[in-house]
Length: 634
Image (cartoon, rainbow, N blue to C red):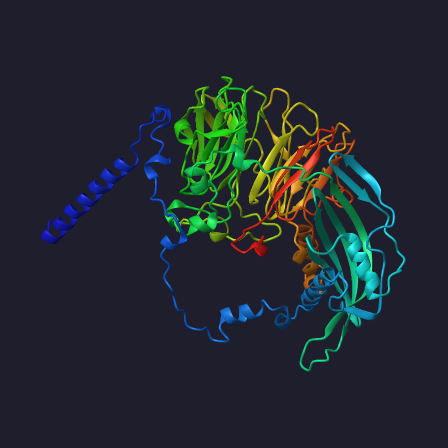
C-alpha cells in the first residue's frame, strides 16, 4: 500500500470513529430503550437537542446580498411583467381591480360631508337591506334574520345610497370586507358580483351582515390626460342578505392563555410562529413553512379527563398537555416521553392493544410512530412503520371486524427526492386539477402486539391512483355492518371506497365515488361525516378552497376558450366547500349552494358538532393561509 493511500485510510477510520462517538453521545437518553422486538428505532426527542435561547430578533444575523438588475427581456422580467393584468391582457382582472377600489370607496363613504361617491349620472339601486326581515334562527345569544330582497330600483341619489349604507351599520368602528367574485364584460362597461361582509360592534351587541351585490359599471373617459378610464357605478342590485346578531358578546371565548401553562416553554416555543423559527432552525431540522400540524384529544393518563397532544414543526418539540381537575392543563411532554422533534403532521389517541388505555400514533417525516401507554400517561416506543413517502393524516377503524383498530395513512406527495425535498418542492401535481402523481396511501391491518401489515393492495385500495391525499374518514354509509372510507385529495377528485367484504371472505373495497354522487373535484383538505338534517342517513362535508380570483378567472372567455371541459373542472375547484346529502336510495346529492356552505375560505379542517346543544349538527370550519407580520395579510 502506498504511503498516501495508507494515510488516507487512517484518516477515514478516524473520521468514522469520531462520527460514531458523536452519534452515541447525542442519542443517549435516560429513557427506557424501545422494545427489542422492533430493533433499534432511532428518532429524536427534545431533551438532548435543546438549543440556546435567542431573546430577540436582533440576535439573528442577516447578510445583505446585492443582486445585479435583471435584463428587461430576461425570463424573470418577462414573468414579473405578467403579474400586471394590464400588460398580460386580462381585461377582466383590470375591471375587477377597478370595481373593488370603487366599492371600497362607496362602503367607506356613508357619512355626510365625505367626498362624492363614484356614481354614474343615471345611477339606481335596490334597497340594500330587505324591508322586512324574519327570524330564521334564534337561540340565545344568537339571532339570524333573512328577508326577501326587492327588485325595485327605488334609490337614485347619492344621499339615498348613503342612507342605505348607514342602515347597514357602516361607519366608524365597522369592519368591512368585500371580494369581487365574478366579472362579465359588456359593450360600454362591465358587471360584477361581490361578497360584502360587515361586522358592527355596539357595546356588547355584535351584528354581522353577509350580502351579495350585483354591480353594473360604466367606464367613462378620464378628465386627466393619459389616465385610465373612470369606473362609475350605474346599477346596484341586492341578490342576498343575512343578518346575525349576538346580543351579549362573542359566542366563543378564547381561553387558551388561562388554560395552558403560563411558562417559558409556552411563551418561548408555542406562541412563536413559523417566521420566527424559519430564521433560527437549520434545514436539517426539516421545518415546513406551511404548518400542517395536527392535534389529538384523549384521556392520556386514565383520570377521566380529556388531554391534548399538539404536533409541531421539525426541530420543535411536540406537546402533551394533561388536564387538571379545575380545567387548566399542565405540560407533561418530556415526562411522558412524547416530545418528539421530528416534523409531525397527524396524531391519534386510540387503544391499539385493547388493554383499556389510550396509546399514541404519530405521523412524522421518518415513519409512522407507535407508542404504548402504561395506563398512567407514560409512553414507550413499540415500533415504527417506515416506507411512508409523506404521511400527513391518520384515520382509524376496525375495517375487518376482527376486534382491533386498524389504520389508514394519507400520504400527500411521492417519495422525497435525494435532495430531501418533498411536496411541491419535489414534484408538482400533474395535472393540477386531476393529479395522479401523489403519494401512495397505506391501509395497515392491526395484528396485535403493535404489529401491522400493509394490506393496501390486497384490500383493493390501490384501484384509485395516488392523489395527493390530505384527509380521510371512516363510516358505515350503506349500513351493512362494516366501515367504508372517504378520502379527500388536494388536487382533483376524491375517492369513496365501499367495504364489500363477503361473509367469511377477506376484506375488499371498491371505489364508488362517482357512482354514488360523491366525486368531489376540488382541493380536498378535510372530511366530516354527520347527519345534519336528522333523517337517519349520513351526510358528508368536504373542506376545500374558496378562491375569489379563481371564480373570476375561470369563467372568463380567455380562460374557457381553449379547453372548456378543463375550465369547468377548475371552476369547481374555486367554488369552495361541499355538502353532500345522503338520499334514501343510498346515493348522495350536492346541496352546497342551496345550504350556503361553500364559502369556507381556505378550509383546512371541518367538523360537524352541535355547538349550541339544540340537537342539530352545526359546521365548524378552520381556515386561513400563510400569514406574515402585516395584519392586512391575514
